[in-house]
Every structure is written in C-alpha cells, then in structure tokens.
Image 1 (spheres, rainbow, N blue to C red):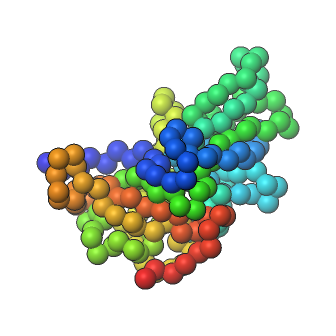
Image 2 (cartoon, rainbow, N blue to C red):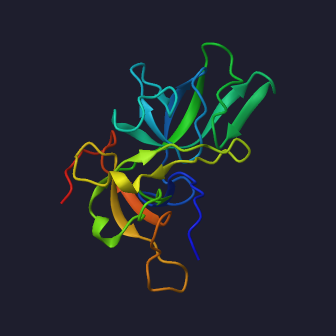
Length: 198
C-alpha cells in the first residue's frame, strides 16, 4: 500500500524532560505575525520575537529558534486568556505580544513525514536535511511542515539531521518509499552548534 502525503509538522519523539511539556521554553510572538501552526519550525527575528513561514526568514536562511507547540494570549474577541495549539495570526490588541511555547532542547528528536521522490532511505541516516512548511490546517491547528527528501546533504547550516527511519507497529522492516517517515534531530538551532554531516 502506498504512503499518503499528509504532513503534520515536527512531532516530538524524545528529548529532555517528559511528555507532554518536554521542558518547553517561552518566546514572544508579535501581535501581527502570520499563522504559526503546532509543529512548525520557527525563527528568531531581530526584535527577539519568533515567527514562522510568512514573517520569518524561511527555510535555509537562518538559525531555528525551535519547534512551535502552542501559545497563550489575551483575546480581543473573547475578552479572556486563550490557550491554543496554534497562533491564528490575529485577535490580540495592537502592540501586544503572544506567549509562545517552543521546544528547543538540543537533544530533542522529532517524527516527521518526508516529501516525494524516493523518500528517506537508510543511506540518508546521519545526513543533514532541509524542511518545507507545507500548508497548516486551520481547523486543527496542526502544521503542514515536512522534510524535503531531495535536500539531503552535508551542508552544516541545514536545520535537521536524519537519525533513523520508522518501523510500523509489529514490523522489523522500516517504512520506505515516498512520503515515508523519519526521526530527525536539530542540527542548526539556537541551543546547538551546527555540525557537518559525517
């Protein structure tokens, strides 16, 4: 059966601490920053806030601040504090900030879907890889980010390193082919010095 392309961003698989918080850190998001979805990689802007695909520098042009895993903000429309798994890009008074939660643990590992082509192969383990944002789901707040299987290489500035393939439940054979899944770790994040591929 062929794999289906249904990316869900970067879902933490392991790291410091324990589920569900994994020692998340807090970062500000400007009130007028575009949508940020649960599982999106985010970048630090010059004012210290973080942003994703539209406002941030984008893949390949900066050091990651971490993976976005939710936020808290004072809603203008609801007149109360709202906790959300994604930043909807509005509903905060002008000039205010949103309190975002990030995973930036240098030892964190994430489950993520690959793009088309041949998918992630055994030979790619240990190599570095780029991501793409895809399209986030505004109904669930879940990211559409995925890793780009065609971008595997040894360039030290790539944001992630392929750690392993995934194995379906009850199988000792890794899931292969386009749109398969891999476990990746940070390579280029604020809390970790970039390194070249082995």
